[in-house]
Length: 547
Ligand code: VG1
Ligand code: CO
Image (cartoon, rainbow, N blue to C red; front, side, top):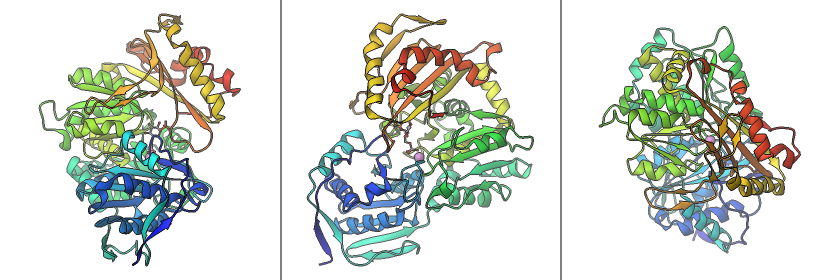
């Protein structure tokens, strides 16, 4: 029989992080490495048997090979039907949507998000569950445990699938359907936004520059922005997905997409400048002359969401609740208060929003790491945020600058920055975290510059829906509503340890709303340096990346 069992030995390093299992390509190329982890998923998530599974990836190096392996293993593990994006391409939000559209029991996404790609780059797997959200921690924990004792995996041995031909193919008892990567996603966006109005805005001369950074969003942006909304040719740049992302770093922020900041500041800047990341779930928003921080973007979209067709209905203008991850600035909290809706603070990682979304308690949520999305899917959605901004621009007739100024005048402004210390020796990173953790209790009540610490603790979260508890989610030092300093260890890096330091400062006086962000945060950065002692304890002179 073509379904066979292959003996294997476990690896011990297959513990998923913030967003799935992420490792160097070389690690994934070890014998049976990918197969072991996939089999652990099939063994633990038994609901996949006899059901539909969605498979796709961001097009990076090793994507096609991994997808053929995953299809063969799905066929070997009794999956009834596998839905695959044409050419193996699916953005993360498009995959989440396909899981929902096909009522699938889960999805396998091959991506390491914005991490560099190519033979020397990174590879990764996200496992999403029925409903489209990322596997919760309890489940990834079980998968990890299973991966540590695995002794065999199953696969259909015989023939591969033509990933480029849309339509049905058969592998043993399993039906393989290759679908257009964009169709369902574009359809979903059409149902949420006023495409006619946006088209008219472009006709009147509205201009956008969207940078797909040679990653997965190229085909999506091309279809939706150019073909469906009539944006002028040339509005989408770097639109062809490449296996190495063109050697670039599709992490849209002020460092890796500095050219977009330069464009925004230039004399000929378009109305909206935007970018997405490797797998299409992040977004970066700039207007003519300014960058909108992700926390601000979330708050501003929240304030205008009830003007957009997909969000108009319901008792609170269609907004049930708002949420942000803990390190994300508290701008959205201020809007939630004004709208009189619930606001949730969750740990870092999109999976923590999913129960609230499923329970109908959330409409819009976001993270400081350039992630925003709504109840329309269960992943953050880069192009969705761009379309939402376009719709707000078209509806209000205002510029990004005018919208931001009006928002800050009404709600106040949260100045915000993140300092990343990449590739630290693990021991040094732990020393920083451990010593701050120890110091936290003694900090409460102390005054630094004009600010007094009202709270200093380690964030833990009890899920309001299922009561599950996530501990150790970052150290926070809170100066009332005025400021916060947060420190946490990244869960997505593939080399050494990455520490993230987040600084937030709130101002609402009219003469304090237009400071350069770095000036506004300079005193807080000095305070953080004294309290957290990152440079002192790591021997670094400063952060590797400031966003
Ligand atoms: C980072 C971000 C987090 C995001 C995660 C996945 O995690 O901080 O907000 O959800 O990446 O993003 P960490 O643990 O490195 O801080 V992506 O675009 O992979 O899917
Ligand atoms: Co991503």
